[in-house]
Image (cartoon, rainbow, N blue to C red; front, top):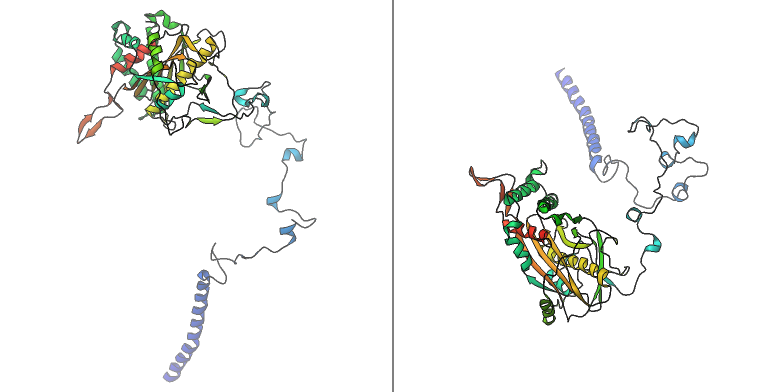
Length: 454
């Protein structure tokens, strides 16, 4: 019995082992088919039926679209809206509620028409566009960055550059009667307002505090109107458009577009240089940019209009340009100080030339009474000062009388401004606030504003 039982066990083991082996083989084959590169695949790459690698079969659907009479699939159907299917349907919209309601239909309004042509929104009319010309024109605009800076701008404008400020500005600076009461304290409060007190942000960006600082300083200058009533006969203009065209050694040049704030006055500024100083510029030689072309970085255009425009209509009560203010704090359009001074020179020259063409005509000549335009530029911390005097409109040849420009560069109003103190090893090394205030910089700023009145 034991042998029989033992024999049965052996027989059962013999019958059971092949069954287990087959099951193991089948399961292994099933698992193996999941990852082997042939057979049935079950993931995006290895599962599911294999995608045919050859061209698609030329069936009526793939060649000529659906067969005649067949209905398009749902993703190809262009179902018209319900309003078009049932025109007599009364649609309930949220027009009367004046705000969007998700379960109500969106109202439809007729297209609004202005009724007149706007150059700002619609652009110029086709008949107003200038026709293309064979002779190119090189244009200097607001975003133009001159490669060689003041050196290049002085050649383009036929200008002799002098370091420092003229005596008229320096005399206004040194006079104590031309200063504000508690001037240093009020200027530092203006700096703190622009850097810390404008909003609740911990760090105010340059593009925000730079124009605000310029506006605060101009506000301090306006308070001098009680002492000098003629300051009330001025006007600040922003985002005006001017254009001036001239020829320089057979090159057609133009300055145009929007520039900074312009301070206009009823009366023009008196000439800074005397007649002897003006005639002495005939012996000066302008430095060239060889081998670099002087028109590098200028925009070359063939569709242009040779015009000279001050940006103001005839009869404007403040016709004479006084000072142009540039606030360059935008990190995306930032200029180097040398490029900013070049831009100041180009636009001061453009405003003076456009005004000279209005007063003396388009004929090139030496002006009987030179035109003076000032310019101030800042990046929120460093100031650039310039006084430009247009002596001649005969700009084509390099010889003869030249224009004059006085430049005082890189004048710091303050060295540093910190919202939080700098602490090292539990010791305050640099406290919060404005540090390194330079009072002489605002004195120059105020002298530029008072020039022509004092």
